[in-house]
Image (cartoon, rainbow, N blue to C red; front, side):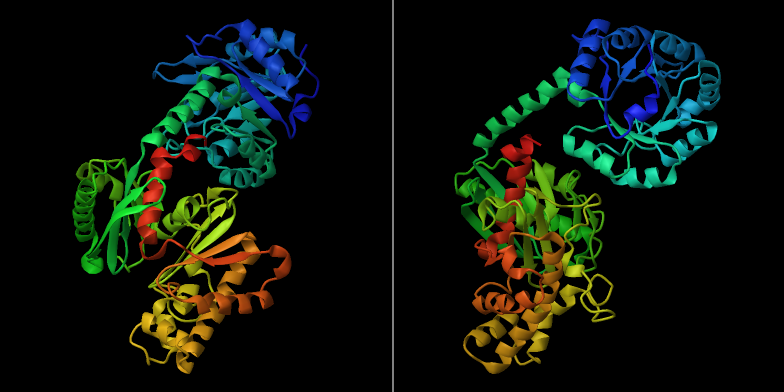
Length: 542
């Protein structure tokens, strides 16, 4: 018997999709019923099932609400969910409490909204609209849908760029709709399901991650295989593309720098010039490896600008590197290097280097700050590098420090970078010192003007770090870059400034340390990115 008030019973819970494709070892109704019983025993509040035969078997096995669908291939060669009223009638007769159907733009071309109204009117059951976009959800709501599900998000021509679960949409949809939102699609971890509920979802549907043993086994098998590959990753190449110099070298998987070199960066030459430069450096890095008798497994590149790590393209870069926005670094360099190429923002790469080779080994929540020509940041939260959904996270240097303050290279004003980069430090010295290195040396030698300049610099940096600490509550801050090297006074000044700027300073037990990676920290960070992406066990277990 269909369960009473099915929508109320689904609120705030997990719905398990019990389906198996043709040819799957579990492709029979009895197996689906056993999966459903196991799911309910584990806490599922509802089941989603395909076809009247499976629905009937599941209905006989469990008492929770059953959402019925029927998949059929249409004339355009694509599968459509519940393509006819007769299909819906068979599902309800088999015991479905709710009928779901495809209400995407394609589904609507096959009459989905009219069918939705007919199912509600003649079969008397709630209807779930499977959609891919908010516009489709609103249209289904207007047609009388009782609830909508994001089932088709990532599977239609308009949304195929969405390859992973991204909970950012949940809050927007939930706020815009007057009917319940069920979140379904590409959810593979409990934390993702929990975030969907926290974001405003009425319920969550999970299928393959629970009921597809073949896929689950494949994830474990691939993790084991990658763990084995990690043992073979003895050497990596790292390239650190800086605004002045490009450093590169050969790094072991334990973080030893075997060979290193430096080449001037043609920063103002534009995208084509920079890419040709990187190609030459990649060839030279391979030659370094050959002279060391090392066979590299991958090439990591650290670059200024925000990077999509999946594609190896620069999402956005300031005019410090003109034309660098959109550069396909991985695509251009892989054929030349003859290796897998992995690209990361330079500050993020340094954080990865600290995690694997430096001061942050064993730390799960820390911030890495790079101080030099610019100011960058990398951040690990819960043991994972925080990039943000659009890869713009950790822009510490571009946090506003002074309202309508000094102009910044990003085109805005008052950013932390404008007050804590090398040029700013020299400015605090009133032009008395030719380089930041000279000023730092003079401060350590007791020159009053240099010492006061460094204290001024530290006050601005402490103000910026205080905001980072208040927001993220890290256990560790690692300072790296040229302005930190041979500058023990900076840490002392910061430790003097920060307690008065951060609440509950003593209770935080925050460590503030200088990076041990030194001058070639960017090279080690780039190599660590390659190690993590290609070889490391941590990536395989994600």
